[in-house]
Amino acid sequence: MTEPALQATGLAKAYTLGRRRLEILKGVDLTVERGAFVALRGASGAGKSTLLHLLGGLDRPDAGEIVVGPHRLSSLGRSELTRFRNRHVGFIFQSYHLLPELDALENVMLPAQMARLPLATARERAIGLLRRVGLAERLDHLPPELSGGEQQRVAIARCLVNQPELILADEPTGNLDSRTGVAVLDLLLELRQEQGCTLVIATHDGSVASRAERTVEMRDGHLVSAVA
Image 1: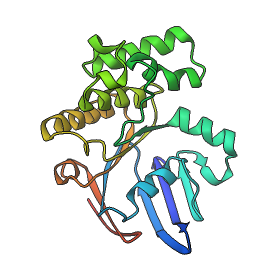
Image 2 (image 1 turned 60 degrees about the vertical axis):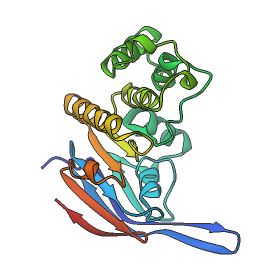
Image 3 (image 1 turned 90 degrees about the vertical axis):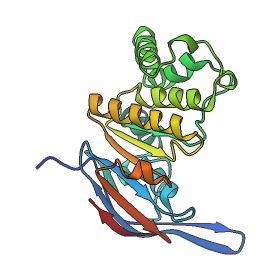
Image 4 (image 1 turned 90 degrees about the horizontal axis):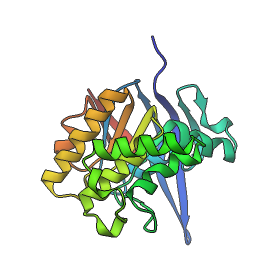
């Protein structure tokens, strides 16, 4: 058998807010097979975003282990973790997180430049992806000049520019109307099929979850079910 795309064991995470200690994750175990599409569901505050951040190395758990492919995240130092995120993981956020002073092409090129790809290669990949997401005529537009759906497509192109093995998407259709949301999900699934990557999406949207090969439910920091 091939190794899983990711494996999380016994994940715990808590934050201190004033005098309160908020336990967000309470012993979460999760295995995702390579090339799978998993939907992560649960109410706001259930721990979905926190789990995605831990799986992608944006934050560290208080307890537990995360292995992504051959990479054991607890063994990576800060600079190694930054390099791991840049080269192996693609993030798509609900609020896009595009840099407002950079145009669409520059936003998509940025991760490739951070990975020290040759400028010509970074530019070629970015233009190809922006064409692929239907934004060939928007290369020089700044984020405020783009609609929400267009900004999300820029974010998808940026996510894919370094050809990541794992894509983590946090409510990627949450700020979009239903028609644009369907188009964005169609695009993600098509690109996932073409590039052979693994996709984990946190979502409140039942129509998004219904298209996943597996749905994982979270409640109060626990993984309460994993339905194929």
